[in-house]
Image (cartoon, rainbow, N blue to C red; front, top):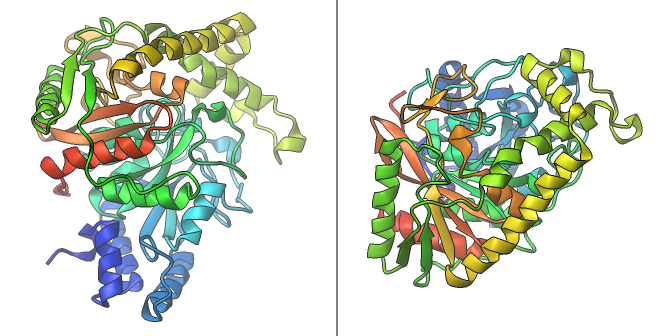
Length: 459
């Protein structure tokens, strides 16, 4: 029999309903597992054991009286540390927020709590969630449970590290440029970036990514991801069909001339063949150029947003943000954002609109896009990015070339495990047209059930 910390959210709910164990026992198992693995991973940065114990006791009482709130009632969960959780500190990875404690839950957090999930802590992020690894001046780096010397990616690195290691079955995070999908692929998890506007937000931090950043779930299976979506987007997220219709999938193995680790390329090639074997029509476009202009400009959005944050009117936020307290990278990003012209920002928005128009034509011929979730395997945990991929030098976003266009256009995308390369997880990415979240989940579930990859690292 599996230990309780190894169970998915769906399996926990089944056990609660059958009286096999209680939410209090599940929480105790997850807290014990977290205490075991977190010293090696540095994934959980805020613990609320007392509040979680109270929530678990209330859930146990509901299950015993037949009043459970649904599939997530009693399920342990964590929240990324750029989302507000009432009564808990919000660090956002920065010394500039020292001492700040949230008075209210951000709206998706409130909805997860209303669904009965037992929130027991917050997970590590890079400063202001602006980088593709997870380390910051407050807490330091987070390790990947498949090799703690390596990064789990970012910016939802703490979230995925703890779920993958068994600390909890579900986590809530954000994605402003691949920050859910890439870390999920680095840790053998499922990570969903919903369509823009699918998950409403409110009572949160200043929106330096505007609505290009969305809230979404990470879990060990598609069913758990769908369950979280039903909780945090109740008026939008329906049950995805349990069997995907035969789909037209356009496989994009490479963006422009950007390198991809050949070990990743081989596994995603194999995944494309598996999707074809499931009855889907898979067409390969060997080289995809359309996203290049957006990729080149994408970091500018958050850089301008960070510069705006520093000068943000105090009546809209209770305290100033002092750039002298930022780490060196964020000080540099603030300077870049301040120096950017209105024309440069307009060019980014213009290129995003042009790409939207061009992809509309592709989506008339294809239902989904398939890409690698990331171009690189995990790299050393303290490094911001891999300096080389497949023997070629790359910049800070070289590993993330498949991600940003999805945010720029507001599309839904999901990362799914598709194998291991030298003991490290590899993920694929499936992208749907805007609003196609449920069809995307159905296709993801179809692939997962035919090719399951659930397993735990040997920590």
